Image (cartoon, rainbow, N blue to C red; front, top):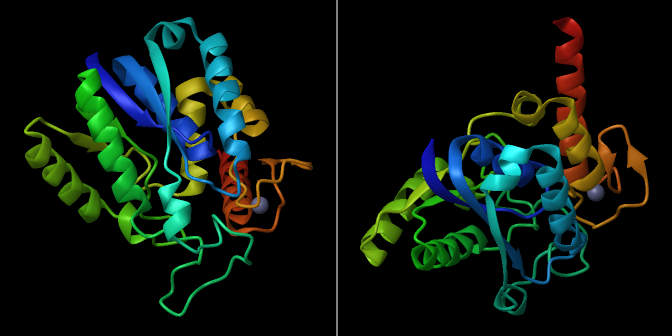
Length: 235
Ligand code: ZN
């Protein structure tokens, strides 16, 4: 078992799966969340719920889980006018990116995570960035993250590695990975506790969890769950 990792943990499906992945691999795992005025601020209230339930699910994971950190990054909302931080409609822009793209968000988050990791003696960062995602955010691409790890390593004069277990899998395979890591209990936890919906709605409980059911994040989560269920039926 390797030493310690810091997981970028938002309280959503992807980062919860990444957290379980890290808990299976590292002796000590700390978590970090960012409060940046996101519309879906409900994910901030779900974070401690998810962590508490992960602890209760597995005594080994409970032992390995260290402190949870939350950093306020209000500057992101001050600078940007995107559908994630304002009340606007979610749509595709002329450059092919959805208007939920917050420019530089992941670069800033990784820099802050590396700085916190430096202070905590942790050089491995784990994030749910994914290139097979529908959105094509340029700061989620593997080449960006490799360059970022190198820049952080040089700039801190201390090794920084960025692990992205979801980089090359789709949403159906993310459910499969969660099932492999924590069985039906982890699937139930993700369905009941995690939050993905961009609009921050938790009213209706669908077969794939809570959410508005129509925003891109809900659509992606629903489609992934359906693919995973269908693949299970075939096996
Ligand atoms: Zn939604």
